[in-house]
Image 1 (spheres, helix red, strand yellow):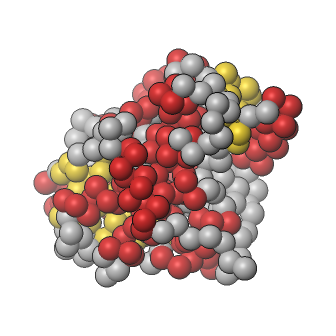
Image 2 (tube, rainbow, N blue to C red):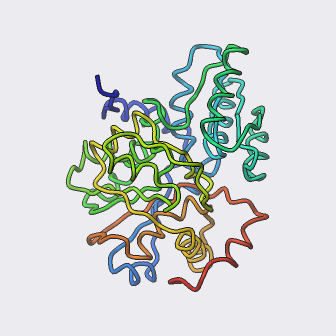
Image 3 (cartoon, helix red, strand yellow):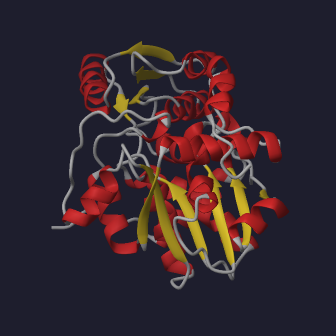
Amino acid sequence: MGAAMVTLPQIRDAEAALKPVVHQTPLIRSRTLDRIVGAQVLLKAENFQRAGSFKIRGAYNRIRQALPGAGVITYSSGNHGQGVALAARILGRSAVVVMPEDAPQAKVEATRGYGAEVVTCGRTSVEREARARALAAERGLEVIPPFDDVGIIAGQATVALEVLSELPDLDTILVPVGGGGLLAGIASAVKSLRPKTRVIGVEPETANAMALSLQAGRIVEIPYPDTVADGLKPVRPGELTFEAARKNVDGIVLVSDQEILDALRFLVLRMKVLVEPSGAAAVAALLHKKLEPGKRAVAVLSGGNVDPARLAGFLGAAGDGRS
């Protein structure tokens, strides 16, 4: 039996629940970016979202479905942890977040700032998940997965509903890919409503688990990836996210760390938009002409939780690129 697919009614239900909770983030535009790409490009600014990324959408949608009164626990490199911490606070739940030992300090502090307990464990998503599930069993907590869950995917899909409400004639939407929850949600919504619109995932060259999995026709696990995009480091896609991508995604393109940093530099210095490296990946694919975007494209800026201590280094490490 195949993995359960997220349905449009589930996505609409998430949309209604999230409307009073999340920001409807803007679509922003740069004429310089349009000129470089050779198309009209709009950026879906989820870096302006509550808790600094799209992750609050899935986290809130899933936690509202949790057992009444139960505390929650998750495992996250950063943004999902912040989303769970904030959503749990809004919903009156206790939250524990298992984060990697090398998580950016800004993300750790923000997660604690929203009221969650932070536990550090290892460097990989596999290690974090094992620790979270052990703690859940010990403490009677409900696990809120970072991406491989119908409630999470349906919440992330609301990004696409907002985009399509403003741009029904969109040619292409580009989505950063880590575990694939955002990609699965957006692709499910887009193909339900505008099947001719292309959905393209963007992965770092060294963190290409989804691309390899789609190529192989099965889930492929990679070694712990070394990439500047700390939010795009899962070593394998989820069962649900892989199946959704296999059914609904038109392709995956890969970008180098240097290309990601070039895009970050363009966004910060030319557009005055602060993103983290993971949030710049989709723009990197456009700036470096990894695909033909059509006449009108949207790139999702998935998050803006960049570590202040590392930002100057990121800007300095970026080449002249196309900025």
